[in-house]
Length: 408
Image (cartoon, rainbow, N blue to C red; front, side):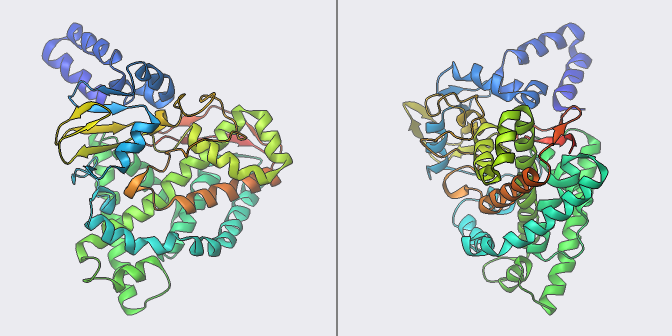
């Protein structure tokens, strides 16, 4: 049961059905509540347009602030007077993603070399080989589901290889990503909580075994570098959460980026035909998808001191919701913001990977994988078409499809 369903049932139990429907009506009038519900999962952009009418910055009913403005989102994300709360999001330990300097700087610096431009140049062959193998398998069946056939196993294969995880079970890791990604919105049920705890325990045990192995047999992988830094740059209790974050961030964003890109292309057949005629446009498709329908829709910052943001007083401890999906369609920045146009010349960068010190460390890898996947898909399956309904994941912070039935 969703959080809204639980709340609705609770109000029915305490106050009766009439009060519960009044509560439902209250939520339907609150756009910040709506983006956490089914309307926010199906089409958050219509809700963002309603929010935009309230101005670039507006108060939430919980006493915090939110913004749909690209300018304000970028300002808040870059301002060191805002930070991460230090509390786990949705009962998940997200390592340095939920830390402020100096701890954030210390751990991010340890992971950074694996995602450098120099490192990227060595990954292309592995990615092309993996995409080719997955597309061969998909072509044999004629009809296939994009997510389990390509969008999920590709980034899982790449990030587990970088970490040094041998014989990775793509299906198991994809399930972990779905459970963890859903938990960022909050644990939705007792069953969800049990799956989250069980998956976390399995992953932690796997990494502890790998740490022990790499202490004896170091290799050229991320886990070996983390083990080598143990006790100096990283503490033992920080190692498993950091590896879990890199695993999650290394495939979850890419899964949804590839999924959202293919959904957009199938909804814009002229653009798909253009890509098939010139597969070198794949990079433009990826960049426009990140603006038009980004995998991460929002993030939060907390004021570490009292300050003003464009004339609005922000108290110490208040939260600021930066609505990245809305910022990427800000009409003050982008012409025809609701149009999927791979030829647009953006005046400023989109915020799909956030901004400031928490800019996504895996951005170069995600864009490289998605670009290669779309290029090879266009080269090898120009007759691709959707043959069923897209089913979206049960999450509103992380946006992407669970199922995209296709025929090549």
